[in-house]
Length: 167
Image (tube, rainbow, N blue to C red; front, side):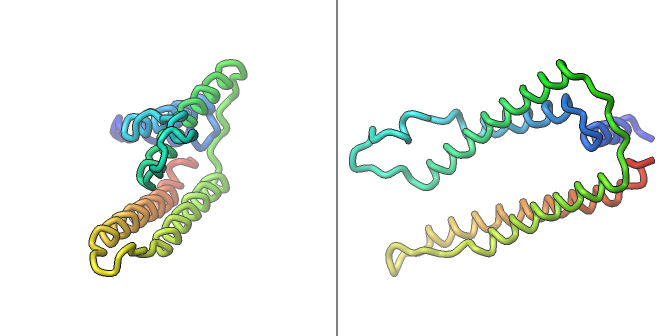
């Protein structure tokens, strides 16, 4: 078995077994990447009426929500790692039932994302030029579809790796 595959399997076993340190590391990494791509949130600007007569765009609100989510993930990752340092626990062995539960969670997230993509609708502001709105709706729908497919693939991969993870 290759070294990369062994490291991947050890990581999956630790994550599925409830290792708080690994969960915190993963949450902190995802939060850091999210904060990097979406920037740091402007907490004061959007919550006050600093811009008189201007309404923040939906895209600006989305970026603000994503950047706040990134900071929350970084804080949650720190809390998980702190908890694991204060209360060290033995990582439980991975059972078949635990793999099935995680597969069901991933499949549920996939279904939610695909359901959200089906609800994307075109809202035209003017009757003639709807290209911009159509492009935005198509892009939003494609990102939701990609997320749904990614979570479905993870669920299938987890079931395929079940004999190796449980052994």
